[in-house]
Length: 155
Image (cartoon, rainbow, N blue to C red; front, side, top):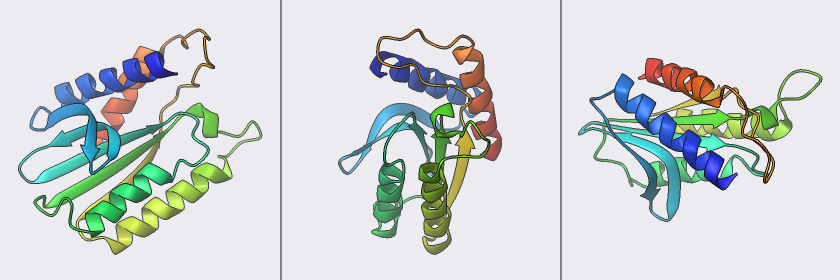
C-alpha cells in the first residue's frame, strides 16, 4: 500500500491545489504527532483530507483531529474542514458500508456538532486498494481526480 497510497495522496494534493489555489496544500502535515494525508491552509481556513484504505480503526486519526481542534490546536483558523475518504474496502458486497465506516462517520458527525467552527465530510474514494504487491487499480488517477473535484466543491 505504501507506494500506491503515496501516489494517490500526492495526486489528491496536486488536484486540490489546481482546484483551490487559494489554499497552500501539502502532504503528511502533522497536527501534534498525528500525520494528516493532505492539508490545505490559508490565513482563515484549515482543511484536512484523511484517506482510509483498510484501517481496522478508521475513526482514530479523525477523532484525534477533532480532539486537537477542541483543545485549541487550530484556533487561529475561522474554519476547520475535516474530509474523510473511504476506499472500496469499506463497501459491503451486499450493499451499504461496513460498521467500521458507520462508526467513523458517526463519531465525525457527532464531533463536528460539538466542536466550534469544524465541519465533517465523509466521502467515498472509488478505489479498491491493492493488496501488498498487487497491481494498482486501473483508472485510479481519474478516480482520484474525481474525488479531488468532490472535495474541492465542498470548499
